[in-house]
Image (cartoon, rainbow, N blue to C red; front, side, top):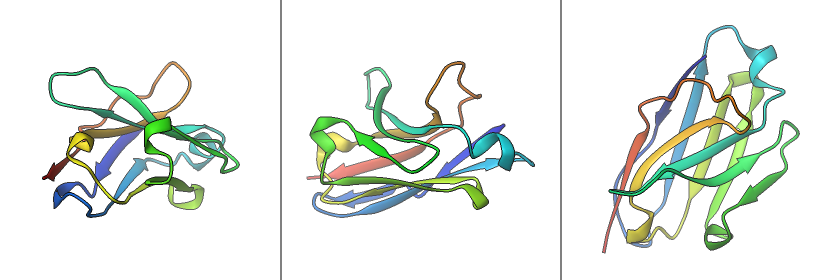
Length: 117
C-alpha cells in the first residue's frame, strides 16, 4: 500500500485547509475494513495522532482539536480526508495518514501545513 498525502500549504491563523490521503493499488478490500488515522509531526517533535475514523465512519479526535478538525473517508476512492478549520500557529506540522492499528503501512511523505500568526 502506498499512501500519498496532499492539500497542505501556508495559511493565516483562522484559515482552513482540507487534506487528502489517497491509497494506491487495487486495495479497496484492504483499505475499507481498516480504521484510518491522521497524524502530525510538528517541527522538532514526535509524531502524534490527531484524528481517527473507523471502517464504519465513527470518528475520534485529540481533545484539543475537537470542533476544529473533521476526519472523513471514501472507501470507494480509497481516500481519507481531514478538514481543518480555524487553524492556529500550533497546528503547523507535517501531516500524515496511515492505518490506525499496527503494523502500519509504509509512511508517505506527508503534507506540510504552515499556519502564520
